[in-house]
Length: 278
Image (cartoon, rainbow, N blue to C red; front, top):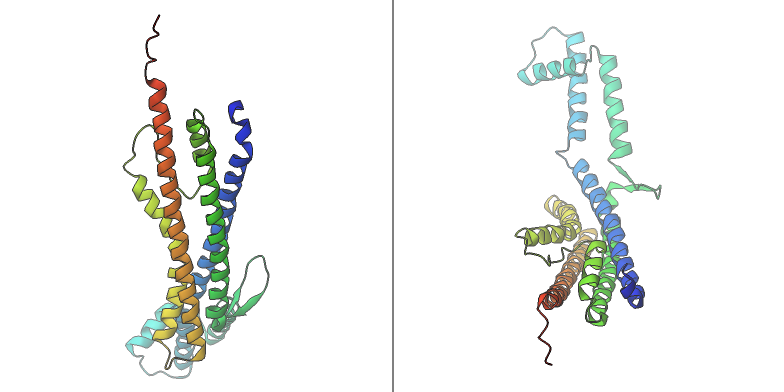
């Protein structure tokens, strides 16, 4: 940090720490969103794990039939017999063992969702409750962190002395994350694209949880009390995601104003000094 910014050290450190805090919460939020999405994806009726279980059950029946009967097999049964060869299953005992292994795998890794680090597990039917609650808490936490990041960045811009604006801007642009500060040298054409991609990260929690709620609504016979709670959680998650994205736009606006003042300082430094009158 330049010596001339010594008076400004506390402001710069506060802005940097608020950005680091937002980044850590975002990483935790994205990891939770990924866990919710994977748990939902594996539990679908058309999921691969359940499909393998159904194939194993059919293979067991086909091998049991061929061991006790000489009748011809249907097309579907011949297909299952070919799959038995792919799985390297040669008899009924191996088919039963394979089927049981898949059932155990599904029970341990699909029907029960294990939470990393925390070490507990919950039933897949409670994914709507626990997933929505976890995402809502993390998004609320992120919203406060982003608010502090915006506030600290604005304080730095307002408190920077004339002549130090360029140094403050470059220091913060190297330290702060989740935003794409405008370039002081030239305008990059991809800046807007990267900004939209950054916004997309904040929409992933609502998207992941929306898939869970939408799937439950689609395959439910009636709107139960549990489904209404999931819908409520989805509205909260979507609303908090929108608030976080709105704060990011505000942070971009602060950066734009910051860049205008920094560019003006750079332009002023290149202007020739007026001639001295003698």
